[in-house]
Image (cartoon, rainbow, N blue to C red):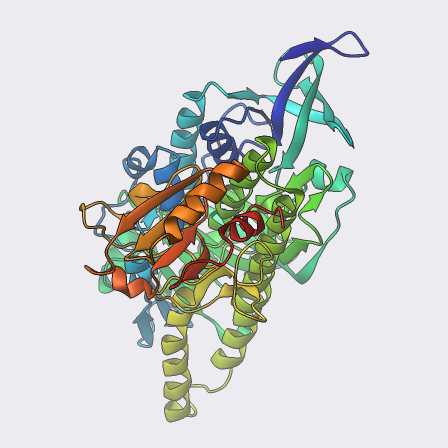
Amino acid sequence: MNTNDRTGNVSQRSHVIIVGGGPVGVGLAIDLAQRGVSSTLIERRPGMHNIPRGQNLTQRTLEHFYFWGCVEEVRATRLLPNTVASNGIIAYRSLMNEHWFCTKGREIVGDYYFQKNDRMPQYCFETEMRKRMAQLPLTQARFGWVVRSLEQDAHGVRVTVQNEAGDGATETLEADYIVGCDGGHSMVRETSGIKRDGTDFDQVMMLSVFRSPELNKIFERFPMCSTYRAVDPALNGYWQFFGRVDMNATFFFHAPVPADTTRDNFDFAGLLHKVVGAEFACDFSYVGFWDLKIAVAEEYRKGRVFIAGDAAHSHPPYGGFGVNNGLEDAANLAWKLAARIQGWAGEDLLDSYDLERRPVFKDVGENLIAARIKWEGELSNRHDPAVNPEGFKAAWNELETGNGPFVSGFEPNYEGSPVIFGPPGGVSSARGEYMFKARAGHHLAPRTLSNGRNVFEELGGGFVLFAFDAPAGAAEAFESAARDLKIPLKVVRDTCAGGREDYETRLMLIRPDQHVAWTSDVAAPDAGAVLRRVAGRA
């Protein structure tokens, strides 16, 4: 809707303004549009960067692409063959060392998700996401525009935007809510007065992209994999690692460097040779720098302002948690905004975005990344193989066996959320145990229905109640309550057999983001009370 604002400029009104057109902002726009919510996306970059970051995509991220209608298109952009898994090599001191092992990749938790994980540079899947967004009429994207001012009141938000890539014209946009997906230096976060804190390692890191057929040949000594990392005791747990971009001998490389390093005063090829343990020719196409730090916002919501992705949290690219966490932010927030805008949810549901997502990332930053850096540093310095080979062997085995939990221990859940029926004393965190049992606050595991369809194929825009040999009248009570409360609900009835007994429950209520909200073997005493709570109306 267009109206005239107080300055005479044309003012566009939408439900949500999204600042930042990277994967998180675009994913949010897609999700909102598919739920009938309009958005205006503002992104400074008219084009696409070509730096191969954000490659290690989890199964959960591919589930988002499935629900956003672009999973096959995204998979088609993969640069590596499907035979190249997401695992990697870890070696001691250099990649030519005799002490090395092959890590366990994300494939080890694949049975608990509806989609397989994948690997590709961010510019590949981001291109397909932009194409999908362009297909949806409820989303308007303004590439080449920037936000110059932001204000909010009880009725909505108002921003001034400028066409930086064009004639410099300014306009005023209005919306019910605004979401900052505009990166670590988020204008939305800073303008709204949201503070961040975290751990600064005071370490400059370099990222290079290069091509080297010779290195490709050297790596033939290992099983084919995605990454190659050397653990150097002198670095106290900081990572130096290579990653494959494609099969055309293109790699990226991360490593710590001195604080005064520039593109002109450092021997980057020499560092690569030291980490590999051999010399090889390499042709650099990019060299850049980033600071090793972990930061998380003190709050993800301030009135009608929300933040997501790197605007809310940032950390080193260790373990591939970055873009995956950001896309999960988008999936968590989209259905809640839509529910509130459409009138069937309460303010408590919007508050739950912060209460669910912030503890997860804080756990990722502090216990899956920062704690691991410290642990690996201590472990690598515990024994020198030349001095105490037996002690070193024990420490090296500890590193190898401890690498699996870095993947299998990452099981984000919302057990402490006030809008789910979690266990007493439950805490939302990034760590948990994978199982098929349906547990409130946890991601639903896939199982097949009697009709041959996967349970995920029954999930959609609203809540879904699965009733497996449920008590008489239990499902009907939810249907009646949902009609009265105008909460979208679909009921799927089936037997508690054929693998569905693995859920260990006869009734399970699934949220629009595929997380379990409530389970029971008996009829709910008050189905309406259950629905009011999960919709933030308690």
